[in-house]
Length: 386
Image (spheres, helix red, strand yellow):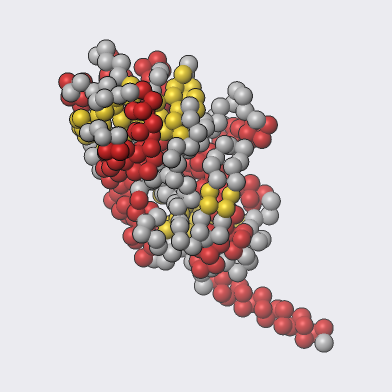
């Protein structure tokens, strides 16, 4: 009888092994996850800490035995914030590396170019660093997003700023692509609810360094409040140009410009800049015990201080770990997405919001907060805006 039971048990394990081998990226000993980042282009300042944060969370999971006995392996491709390179990277990760899922792909232009290819290949497209509506709507079984969409949080942030400060002439500087257009929709929606128009708008091309003409145009329009649909370097360049010309207008940047690098690169020029964020920056001074320990381990692992992008990278990887664990040992795309659709996480020691997913809603959070650079660091000014 014991021999029969052992034989049946061996047969079950063998069948499970064959089934796992048929799922791309899932083997007996590892789960392979892919990510497309910018490690060499204009937003490498964001891509490198995102990658490091994800790697740290996977390292932590692996040190604890992995997920149901499987170690997690992260394969990162550098697209340099170039959609064409992003497509090549996605194809490599699908066809050659055979990743199970894509995690935290960075940059709206890259995400828009690669997302159709990824979902057509049957891979989960998880938590891209692009709060674009199409990353979660219309609902698709393979698309999940945790970052508040540009339209929603810029609608709320614009209304908050105008109502709080009494601005009468709101203007917009935006990146000339899907990212900028999504922000514009949110700003216009917020102003419409207040019965105000968008007085002026002007765009720039990705990677621009000279903003003199755009700033002159906005100043000439008499703007008393400027929304920036920019990323870190462009944020610094635009604000610095305004201050150089003596224009001290209030400015609000999206979450794409909310980073320690903004005040580290901009110095005194960016003092007073407002920003939208989902998470507080992980400053060492005043950190709670768990956060202080995490900051120490991150420094030891990567030889640099973490920033909010490191935290977000860690956070997206943590959601993946939780969902994969919930899906069970017999990991398939179907079991993973079912686990995602019942995932709910509380606020954590980073100060992150609750993330809640359901069968009908694949967007885990819709809200952002207002912060401001004061004395060389970001200070949170509001709770989550609705």
